[in-house]
Image: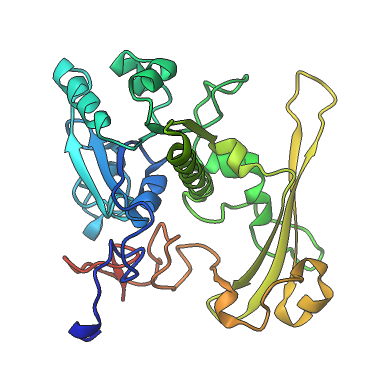
Length: 340
């Protein structure tokens, strides 16, 4: 781009569009892989995101893949991807000085992004109600695996567990053999997909809470359970998608819940998916309203990140298996590496 055409912008997720809608707001992020994507979205919208790391660095620095396959906290492509456009500060929350420093940061913050599942409140000596009383304008955005109440509230989770429980893995896999039998198990659509779904919902909740604060001056506690976000039993999701080979499809997905018949057994959850090539979409009632003739309206997708050759995909979690990556220091793009 010629120099005279360049304009100042907040980062690669917005490019040269100018200041984002959250410009001037500060986010204090105390998050792991559950909510780092939410922090990335808020940073992409222009917020100043300050990530709190313990001594030795955040645990997500140890998630691969790593640059040149050398495992090191400063070489994690996962950490680079989900924490770009953020600042970082190291605080030891086990020490009074670290806790006091975080409280000072919260005095000037607009949003606290927390996926510690109560550990932060315990370290500060403030439960959620006391935190809200001390910082009445603060929007607290929390991500938990299974929510704050109910029989699963203390269970741990993972991306794969949420995708399986939510039904997404039933949507993915390979075609059956000629006898219409499946000889492979369900597979995950891509790595970290559950946290992407929940992260987008939490970001929307944060924006709604900021609008509420704009009118009332009051902060709010916004909580998203990953399981609830991923298990969408009553919604019909319609997508116009394009594969890397240029083929376009219209797909519809709906979750179903079947009662177990006993209070001692969890309900059964199913996902039903229908789809067709774009040539047949006019016979598909759920395609009504989609811009079928607009190539730009299709969402680029792939079989999985490991097989998809697309560059510039903001949903990419891993590079393709069969192509090298390029690291260009100081060059900003949607993902922190190029695919060569």
